[in-house]
Length: 343
Image (cartoon, rainbow, N blue to C red; front, side, top):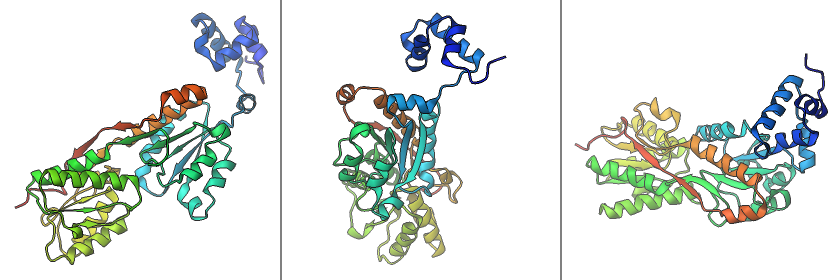
């Protein structure tokens, strides 16, 4: 029977090694020969020894926690990114703290929150953070411990994992063009958002390549929300020369647009074809099923977590040598029922 409250000395005695070897097996197992490592872990199982994580973190001067900043916890888009992060961190020694950064920013206390959270690193899904806010966190224990997932800060030098947003927009416009559409509108995301800029740039580049007409009223400002799609439907209704297709900067915008158009008698895709961006779960069951640009959100989250763990185990010098070049993942167009050939 395993003793209660087994100590590291008990593990060392059963394994026939020193307590220093047991400690090394727990912190750097690759430094030990396989027979020694196996003996230690078998002894841990026999004795029921459990690492005192709080004491271990104190010795390492760590909190044992990682902060995940999400700009809107109510948005289903972020669920798969968080699942990807959790798939990696679940097997680590770090616990996860998730915070809605929009609420903190509205109160003007985000910088204080970052400092007071006492975390070892941060993964931010929020690209609207300011460099000043980040610099306050990026000091002391937080130095070189910030990774961005999906979004990023354009004027900050931080590693990130993202998709090729411009290419996704190009695929959307090209798909509509191949279906015969020449009057193609675009509903954007928030004006200051990096994803908005990348997707709009890709959209404009593809329009120019295909020599499509561009009218100012065909670029409609949105904010990634269902409501902005509903608002865009009203603007399209008021146009004397309506587009025959619309590329939306997010799936939620597309859902709102389709619902708004259908409510005023403009049918999708019979009257107007609609393409979204993201391929969130609802896109597959929405009526009509949404044609969209798929980004692998779970891979974004998993890779961001891996990058942060790598930085947490490296020295500052090796982190700087690694560099902060973004990792850009591919996208693909998923053709469903919301687009059709122009008749």
